[in-house]
Image (cartoon, rainbow, N blue to C red; front, side, top):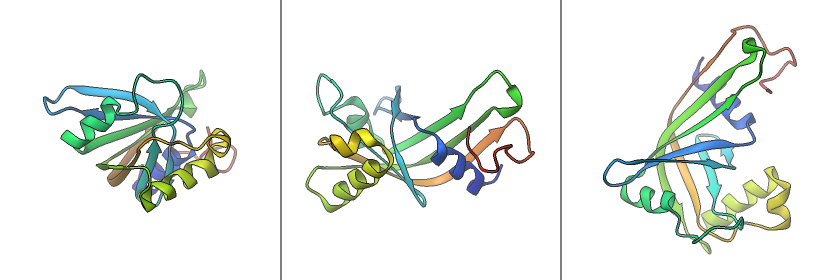
Length: 148
């Protein structure tokens, strides 16, 4: 699978997993909602219940900005399985910054919940350096586009 196909598949997913590592190289994996803009992946700390908005993923990015994002599709028809991954460098965007407002706007266009309740916590911008992926079949999607 080429980079463009991997980006398209990842962008088609509704949820992905963000992998970070702390300064001691201990991995941390969390599900995220996200938006893709060219070679940029954006996500934010939203208002779902949490103990704090200074989440471990934010502290990990400050200690080690290398991250991975993985989206996949599973169904019992294994000919339709796929996964897509992005590797890149992340940075935290604090509320009030113009880039933060852009990230929230892109997320709100993608998720109705964010239109009703925009994320107020920090956002994350990931500059993707490598897209990769796999799918079970090389034939075109039956629906004509890379939807699950």
